Image 1 (cartoon, rainbow, N blue to C red):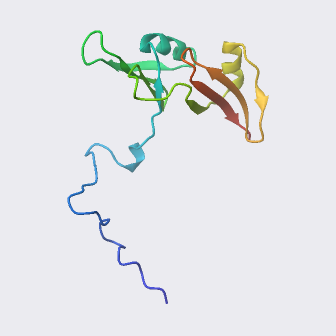
Image 2 (image 1 turned 135 degrees about the horizontal axis):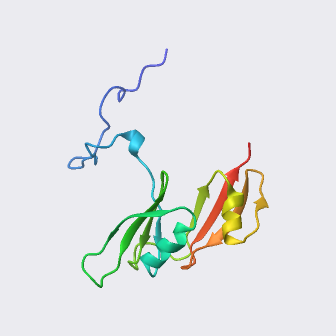
Image 3 (image 1 turned 60 degrees about the vertical axis):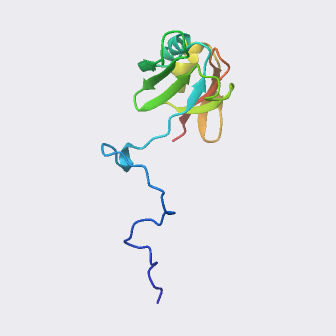
Length: 138
């Protein structure tokens, strides 16, 4: 008969002096990944992403004239747009699943291609970041 692991029912083992980051207002169901995209002009990028249904949630600058960092959202999907040179690499690829890839393709005048897993199209934002957008096949 297999014995249960000694760690079952205990807190995870951590090196001395290390703490696990926790936020009182979040639980595991609130966790998410938010891609950071490098942009030259956050306001111009936000206008382009508005064509995909994204809306600006907030923008931050440490002071006037310094680079902006903004969040855009489309439903539960969020992207960070950063003018800070070290935050992300230009040309990043983000995959976006949508209910109707044909509507997106029509908005941008691009073709839709068939892949084994989805109907897809690919766009480049004004800063060269790539968005592969697809509707999964049933």
